[in-house]
Image (cartoon, rainbow, N blue to C red; front, side, top):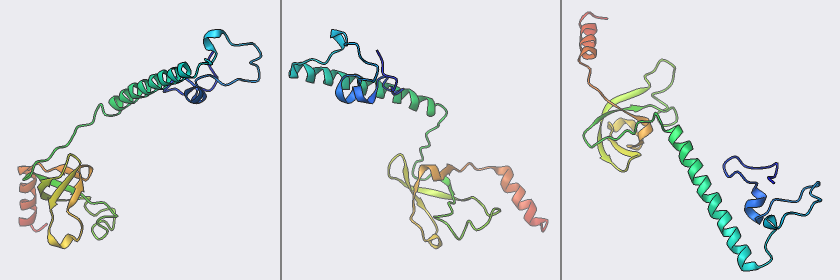
Length: 162
């Protein structure tokens, strides 16, 4: 007999996880079957609780791995090497002078990656006038891809006096 309050991840009630039995309800007037009663031997009871906790831990790990696999299905890991060129996303709290209005650029660069601290943190070669830390999270970086057409458009625009 399952309690009406069960957690989706574990499939059992939190009360049962802690105490090893489902709580008595107001309508539980019938004696429980022998296989559902708590054991009176302390050593055996400890083993039952340990098995229950192991079962709950395994189930939580299994459910979490399926959730993370589903959430990360379309994620691509970004890994930059020293010498790569990257765009730096300008956050308002980190670059207040560069993000004053809607029409200001949202990225700056390209800048060179100096050092890969770990998979999430990179040291970027910033110009001296930025006055911020050169360590950036990978979520604030995007790869720079050289586009010859874009540079031609800029030079044509400058020569026409636009």
